[in-house]
Length: 545
Image (tube, rainbow, N blue to C red; front, side, top):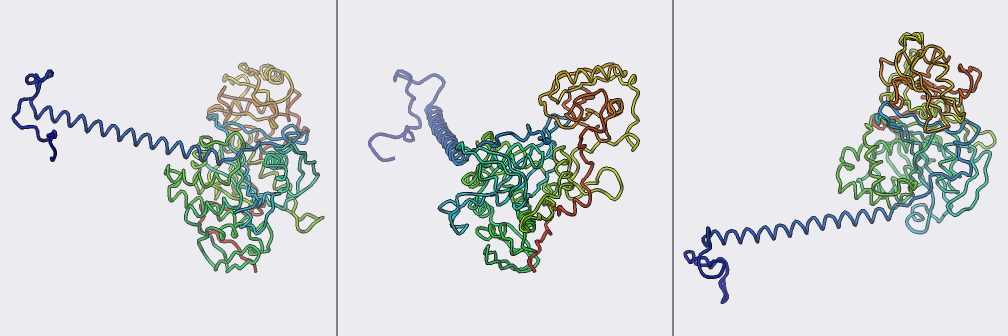
């Protein structure tokens, strides 16, 4: 080492080590040992400093992205109707029921808006239009046990009632007896949510709205998505230009694929939903194959991209809440995600619009509201066998006399029975508990319930050995077939949850209005809804003739 002052390495090998006072050798140490210890301390100090720097940089990095993404996310009220749908006398909203473990299903309204603000959105759309409509609208139902999901596309030309709404600025929008379902977005996403709730009677927990540029950027981020058309498509309106067969699309071509109408089949909005289903299924498969959501860096990158074009309801307008929701959604196996297009009929006043196929649509939404997997029925009677929709979440109870456990005599039921009042009638649970005790059920107790707008009366059993007791309760009260099923909130082996259809009387009145959940999606509904699976890699959109 150069210089006048010797470095540590130049200490003579045999020189005595200086003691604490500079006089003599220190106890227990020789020069080499002392040098080694000093060197080790310095190395440890350097390593410690590097660790602090790395950890500090990581925290700063994470903090930066947390702040950035959090700042990008836009929140808005979940509801916008002056009178919430669940308070309407025309049926309201069916409240979800927890499964046997207390988990609730999740219903999300996905909205693709055609708002064209100056900048990238306007460039992609071809002009500026700040009004905004729901260009794409999908109701996503995730089962309580996260084993399957159902995605129902709502055609934007669907004519439905629209409630009176107030937007975020306080401006009022009058109710419409009938209007295009996507026009409700003019009063904000909360009004769109309430329009769908009023039409479907399905309780919506969240909404997610993305604009044109968000679709383009997300597709680019994953390196494109594979799509298929039965023959070449050249649509001058959307600028979609694809050869026959499978192609990888990204950027503006991905957006064109999702938005084109004239390029598919008869040029209606109904066939465009098939293209959207194929695109989403392909996107989900690609993200899972790349383990994108399991890689923190990739997940952060995707979230940053998505957040720039994302508006969600206020309760989930944060990084933490969206991560929690993402972790929940990714539990659903791809092959158990089922896409449907809502069955419709012609709208007589205007051939360019469609009306709900009320009978079929009611069956689909009743399945969703009662957390039943949407599957095609088997050729035999009884519950459906799972097909592309995946396994059923909870099979509907078998009516007595159709293979269900023999109903027990009331006096033979020793298990605890809790009656929950889900109605607005005070003391209703205590009334029915007294009725059951008078019938011979000794352990019946009436309690309140967290919600007072339960629509349908149901009897739940927490374990299979209690099904006979649940059937006995249903038989004593003359409840309709299909009212007994596994689940409940775990408060007792048997739980009778009283709904608005049984708000009075000691026995169920068959004449009272009721809509028991169907046991399976009828074949005519399944065919009309064009049921597709996200796991099917052979889907191909029918090109225009």
